[in-house]
Length: 246
Image 1 (cartoon, rainbow, N blue to C red):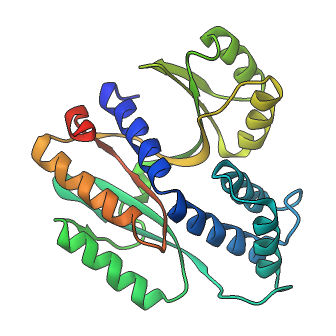
Image 2: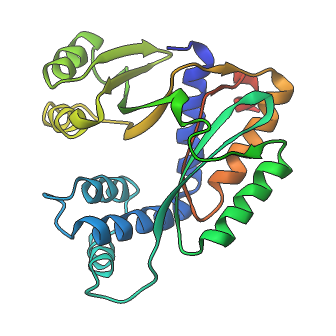
């Protein structure tokens, strides 16, 4: 686990998401459509759809909007279809990037993503070029002021979590992806409010960035996150706190 800059990265990511609520709705909509199309419209039997609906609810998307999206995904209602694609690449300073995307036109999106990497001093890689340096984990963030660390650890570990780490007012719970729903349900049943809950790609080794490279990496992250087809951006960058706060 990295130190100060890792937690600053998390806080900055959450703040950026909060600022782009309209774009978040668009990304949640695509996730619901694809999940419903590939796994059916019942979240009880479609874990990906349940994740997508949970994210949409966390973004305050209306229930009737979610229901219409599920019906579009299953074919009950018409609409554009999207496919899941993952891009990999490198940014300034050798920082690794993983992008999870939902796209309607593969050639168009690939060209646009490549252009963004080139414009910001990076390069788009081939499949598998950076994925090996990440591991998938369930990740929950809790405000340390709302629950004691011992209490959170007791509930989380009993539900199958792997670890609980505290730093800078945040408690982070991690688990295997297969335990994500069980841990989430147990935390919610215990009345523990979650600041963030998602299955993330966690880097095995982080790359510390200086001020110059850090600013370039941040601009690339923001440009990619602003692209309509990009759902999630994962990196192994540890960005300087002063860059994130500027």
